[in-house]
Image 1 (cartoon, rainbow, N blue to C red):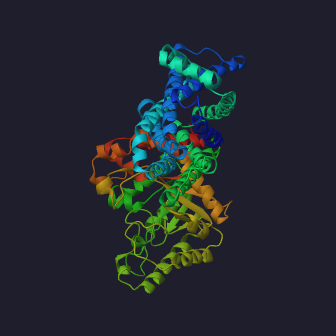
Image 2: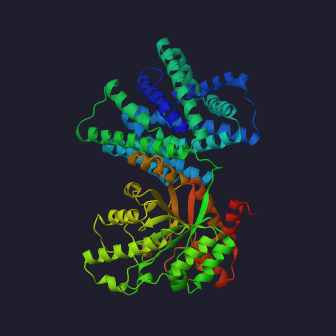
Image 3: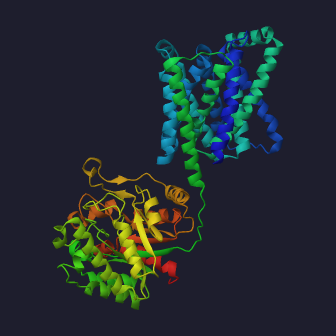
Length: 613
């Protein structure tokens, strides 16, 4: 969060300096914007006083960047001062404040190809909107008069910010800062070649009061501190975010203009300036949260457990595979430490009161003999579309009877497997708080009743309750179970809007999950409860199910490179246990398409983890 804290301190300094700039621009001898900017630039030579502290001459290309950044910044300052002179302090500056961050971001995209994450964009948007509100509430005639100057200044400030960033990344901060300052000073010095500029400068020296000069120098020294801090923030942060976060100085200017310059605001204008101020504070708060999320540490050497989810129904009924061969390949070749398997109600109790556990018995037996720990998912809502797997005979029952027969099924499953040493935990329902899938509404108490039933029959094993990673609130699921399980899906085809949007990539960084975990633990008070990623997407999610889209489309959606990237992304989210989702598909492309590469990625991952290389 260093860049943000630095920017806020700088904003207070620059905001107060701008108030005094406005006061000095009204005084004799300092009313010409270029004269004022000239002395701003010339004072850049003072940065050479830092030379003994390790300033070095940078490579020629970097020196050119530094001089260019300083010169462009001085030009931006000139138009800034021009707009400041012709408009009120609380009017002209917020106009530039709304446009300069946009210009910085666009130049960053064009020159640096530097994008912001979704959390950063939200904060950036709030800050930019606040500047636009400041602009929109002013009188029409004033806005039109200042708009051109403000736009030029904003564009130049944006370009200067990016040139500064490029310089800072190519040289040490102190040297880069000094040569950027000298670049502005050289442009100011070069302007003396123009006779009318020399005349104005001479007039300023001869007619300005000594007190004005003293105030000017003192204010420049004060502003220089802010400039150094802003430069440091740009060096370590994103230039567009730094520029946007400087919107806080407009709060300072708004209040200062009101109290010190006696600028008056009434009615609608006052209301919207207060709204804009609140948005600035909210935007800064949001960026603070985003910066905090990015700063949450993770241990790159922590012990990570990689598990696999397997669905015999999906392997057999949707992909047309020999599901037992699929399961054997997972167990014998991939050799995961843990697996999640599913007790499908519609498979086990196809006729009321008639139970066939043969498939699940076989899976648990294979896991046991291979030393694999099992998470057994049971209930009405369990993994794989359509999410709710209710036998046809149960669908016609009334709600009360339906809940009762489901309870009877759950009891049968728990009683059958509670003594199996392979079984490590129960998963009761799958994402029960997420509205997704073809599932009817159930009584609010249903989940708690199921969990209580499972724990009454098997009090030794923990119960995991899951929720959606991106849209789930988490808190209810955390409180309900002994272990909390979330999901990570990065690339999806939303059933309700996919026909309009196509494939969607969620613009969430790994820090989103780190911060969400911190926040969820804070709200629930569950600081020690285990959190796992119960589903880590490792297969394509397209407009149709896998067998109905071409192999090319499948691999376009979920390429090998994207698979590797997803694994690295998951590691950065900070969890200790992940269950890969897609083992049936890796086997499908291996058997149907002859492509073993997806299978090999998982094999290599698990081999490295278990030291089997």
